[in-house]
Length: 393
Ligand SMILES: *Cc1c(COP(=O)(O)O)cnc(C)c1O
Image 1 (cartoon, rainbow, N blue to C red):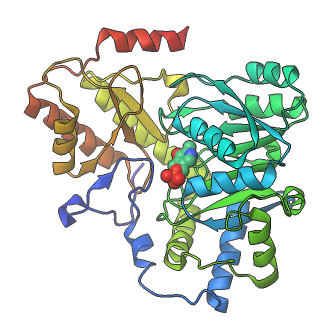
Image 2 (image 1 turned 90 degrees about the horizontal axis):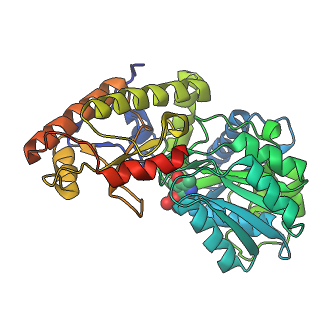
């Protein structure tokens, strides 16, 4: 899969961000930020309106959902969703298998909302059957919170079976689809989600500055007065947008303009299916190349997301992550440290304005970086493979 549009070039002094966001954006998206917008002006209001409609279309809206953009990073939107849709006497079952699930649980603690956790550790997926058991055991649970792609390991969680178990138990599903929406399918009415969140700087390939909540309109209406926070009140933001077309407080105008360009390019590329195909191709080329160097992935192929992939650090004592990072950066690629607790790891993202040709260059850079350190084989230590065997069990 090859991109025809101009792509950023490390020779221009800009490295590729092999990270899960902020990520490498197109020249066109960056250019869209070269003018100022009056936040009250009709042109900007039209942009906000069109943006909401386009996002709803990507979510497969059947007319019963609405989209509420919100200033801040993705975590602000998670907090806004939880504080607005979980009633003060509600209780959330959080499905955690990494940093973002744990962050959501911590957010609920801050909000004073009751929460119970299925914590699968660093990388095991929460399965539908265990969600069903947990829901049957605790009738006080009103909502289930799932992380679509847990970006800390790169695992793509089985959202369909989680949604099915939640629906059967008559509870409501909230989803953090931050790093998946726009590429991995999330058809809101099919899954029956109550609400989900994502942000501008992930699979839609915009710049950071805001995120958005997509929720059943009935749920938004019912959220009046529920939020603990003025600025993170989804209902209040929605009500103002519906009445005036404006954001309640200063909108990130340039980031919105950039996002509109990103949405047009998303559509021109062929929408979410085409984006998924390109990211999958990026992943396959990159993973095959890294494996050929001896690197091993944390996850078996079934659970590998097309978003970001975790690799074990090589066992060779000549390997040093900081040196590896610097050598990759010198060749125009920014990689990402790992987040595993048991063994050393690093991550390589597959999302952003990059194609398979770029991924091949990244693998070549990794080969040179290994060579520079005197590492002849990138195979991981035995303990890493033992960890992985637990996942297969
Ligand atoms: C990126 C991301 C977030 C939000 O992180 P911010 O740094 O607040 O933008 C939340 N959840 C997941 C799964 C993510 O990948």
